[in-house]
Length: 554
Image 1 (cartoon, rainbow, N blue to C red):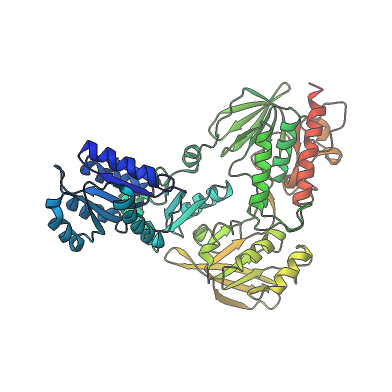
Image 2: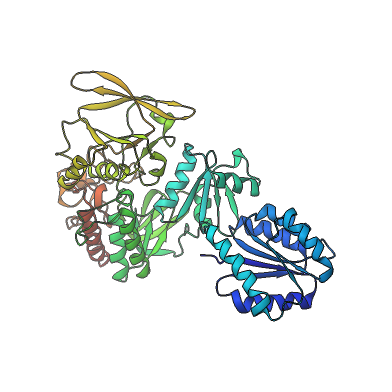
């Protein structure tokens, strides 16, 4: 936490040096001591301090200065820091002016020069004033601030990106937050600049792209090496496990993620069935532990960067990235996981990011306070989000097409949901249409699949967790997929007629190997995967074993 500031201003160098010496001697443990001999310079500094979120506790100002009188300075300084305590340093002839200033600028005290000894004439006065100031002092959030409109899709994208990448931030809604309005005025920001990301050093980025924001945050978006032993595409639990084992076993390992580490598991508010965590842990906590562990083993993490294509040349693989650059690697592990399917309801596209979200319940939870919230989906991710959102929302409705949750959700979650009063299950139900007002979601149309009864309901937020569509459309190589797009691996490849046309090695594919030698698949993207965090982690670890075996062949 930043220390509050005591600001001394005096045009006399000797007096300024003496007062600074005494202030530092007594207060530098708990306060930053700033000083200047120019009140005009001090006013400029105050603007920058406000932009950086600094707090000024007390001004100690000389009355007679050539640039302006101390009372005049305090009058202007009050506009920037109205709650700071104000002390005037005066000569005997300035007493009348100091007394008038008590009413004119709410002067807290005036001290006659000299103030020796400070233990008797300076510190007791300042101590009393600082104690009073501390009673009302609330430290400002010392980190990234995001200003914008709650129901703006790009604002949601930025918040989700920061949250997913574990960057703490403070959300300030420009429509409702006085702090947001203060920051906007201070930086001369307009509606067209939103969303804005404000940094602790006082800099602001207006309407930044995710790549611009990532670079500003110090994320690595460009590969550093010319050739890697293994490149892992996707940093969900499976990709993270592969990175940990690749790095720990001495492979030159590159991990590439288009958005943020953790995948869908990273957005889970609570994972309670993961081995070794009897009290459960959040997806963010698991992700943070895993990415820290992987980096400790020396892996290189590229994010946010998307792989658009894979090419092969001799025994090498070439990854084509979204900026057109290429990365060479000896082997690849594809662990891109799955995406949620789009909800086939009228109006969904119009309000996506403006009340309708795919996953992301943790990012938008605060905005759901006392609201009517709907969740579509009956899997564990939907259940975990329902439990989490019930702490904020007035009511949470889980919409499913089946009779109950037993076939798709773990029993521990079903038991939790049944015990929470403001969670309601809507079985045999479809959302067929969404409506909105002022650019944001306001209602849903619900249809009972058994009775065909249709009804309208208020809804301020809708979270979608339906189906699992593998993220494999970008793979144009002759890599065999099943009818749903999941990557086929191992002996399951043999059943395809095209397998022998593609596979030219004498051996059979390794267990997690695709029909392209040296390209492996692990986790939810693989056909036949179990869709559990633990199994994804296991497959990622196993993939590195097969990578080692493959590398001995080339």
